[in-house]
Amino acid sequence: MKQSRSQRALGRLLPTLVLIASAIFFAFPLLAMARFAFQNLQVIDLGWNNLFEKWSISSVTASFSDDFFAEAFTLSLKLAVGTALFTLGLLIPTAVWVHLRLPKARVFVEFLTILPYVIPAIALVAGIVVVKPHARWFLNSDYSLIPFYVVLALPFTYRSIDTGLRAIDLKVLVEASRSLGSTWIATLFRVVIPNLRAAIISSTFLTVAVVLGEYTISDVLLKRTFPSFMAQYRQSDPRGGYALAILALLGTTLLFVAIGVLSKSRSTRPQQVSRSQENEILV
Image 1 (tube, rainbow, N blue to C red):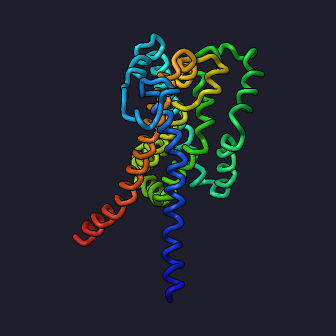
Image 2 (image 1 turned 90 degrees about the vertical axis):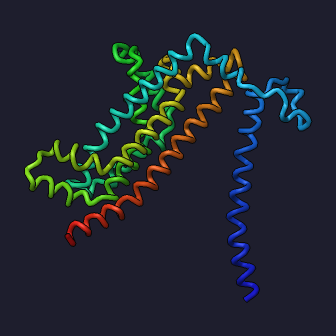
Image 3 (image 1 turned 180 degrees about the vertical axis):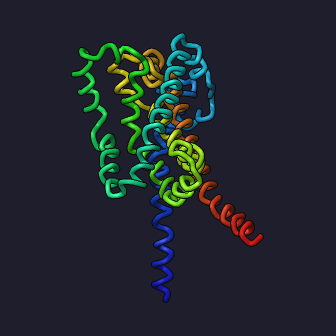
């Protein structure tokens, strides 16, 4: 009995120790980078005795005043919006069609969407370099990055939409809408999409995170996006460059926290809906 209790205590303690060790492993490099970026001291002078001295945000505010910051950040936001709209317009009809008409092809579609995660981005860049001389009319535009970002985000965005479709009774909803005389387009916009609100928001946030963190393709195509600006600015001002990287990391973390909150609220909503429907039926 005592041995079983000790085993249970060890089983509860071990995961906690692993989490603490993982947090320390990831937190210490980030804290060191934050100290280098925001503490106005020479690196050789950094120590435990001056841990709380001369902290300021002057490094990041100086980067905001750079001539190319607003241009690069605005371009990344435009690319994020365009990529999110293109992704949703492509994936929602495709996922709905696969769920309704080709359920056996779901495995094949999942395999295709996971390929960008398996194949490194540098392989896609190599293909772009080969095609670049023959497609300058397209690659010269800043918005030519959108199709490549859509491909890079597919492993995350498709699974978000697919999970949302699995959480609802899609076939019943579509058949009920069609039996009431709605067209396929009306059914998609008035029935399916409102039930995928949380999945759409999650997919959009994931797309924004991918766009704000992608550097390789934009650098090869010589586009001044926010990641490219950070890399170039870091060469002239290392502190400001790492400060921007920390802000980008915090922004991405907030996006994932928002995804978790929205997913949690969405998971509790069907119970409320079902109770209201039961009350209507009883009345």
